[in-house]
Length: 510
Image (cartoon, rainbow, N blue to C red; front, side, top):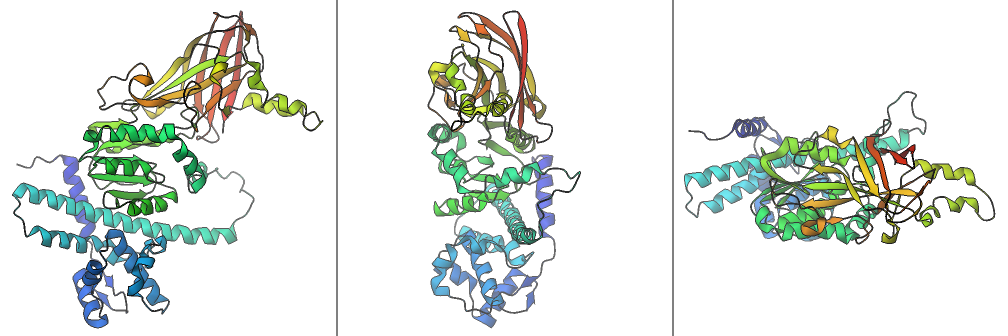
């Protein structure tokens, strides 16, 4: 009896269909075309004195090394330059040869077969039962699909580079009337460079929070399949691989993924991490379901940039029914301040700019969310949680909301600003209750009372500042809404009641 689920059968059929296509294999050195990979290797050995298996074994080449080797040879032949097999270590250290020379290179598509055959030859020396054989076949099919996907990604990278060069000469600074703004491209491009990743990785609260949860719960990750959404430099993927994950699928739609791939290779984790470039909403993962999804998706005020949408879509597409989301829950926290010093930089600065008044510039500070580190002494109201996002149950539409709040003031003075931050919680299963405080479990706070993080805190500076007394309660509501022009920007609206009068003010975080 076949105990596989329908999704597993469909997945295997999809893999089989991919590999039933008839491929043609172009020789690496001449114009001959062979009909199988074995024929190609035999031809290269007999006609060009190139023994792929010998070179691979002599130089201890791994999977990505083999890709670079093929592309290096093709590149040198195309340029009519000599091939230096004595200097392969220098050649393979560069990511230049991760980009395919030929579009739809069948050798790259089928490279996994050569590695698979090595595995199968080694396996002949040991006795395995039928169950293990089936397992090996599944792993081989998974590797073949990964190879196909990798080759496609390499071709996409090559095309993107060509389009980038072309657009540099053909672009215009004027936008066509009525043309929709592409909010995704700039977003992914903003994560392509080193600077933003230096800031995030240097945030010890953030990075150690993830590391400690993963390393101190290695039993959760051992032998499991993990999906890293928005992998960046690959740091979370490498944590998971080191913790014993069977395979990590690291997804990113930014150029940084090329660096992530190199980072994994440098740390001898390339065999444990499969990198997939693309949007999580569009890509395919070469397994039916994953056991764990890990992602650092949080933005300023938690939902800025709307990356949470992609993580929730990844959950619905790829996570097993009893799988784990890490982190499992986040909570938005609201407080307020009566400390007028919070107004100095965003407002008072414009009153005297090198002897000139620029008071009209103050208006922008009343409409924008200010992001800064706020001293704990400025927190003059008891913090309250006003929104909880459980990553196992939350839906995309839940990320936009309007929730009530009640703030109890701890000191008297002018009601100057609302303060917003968030806390992050990790649990060991989707069924584990989330503790009432972040100090009671794995997790971290981005609040003023904790170690400062790159998220800092968000201040909503009020135009009108009514006097409040210590012990008084401020009732109101706060709404988080995606901006109508750019859905990665965040609109915040606060309505509140003080001393018998109602106030409403809107802000944008962009």
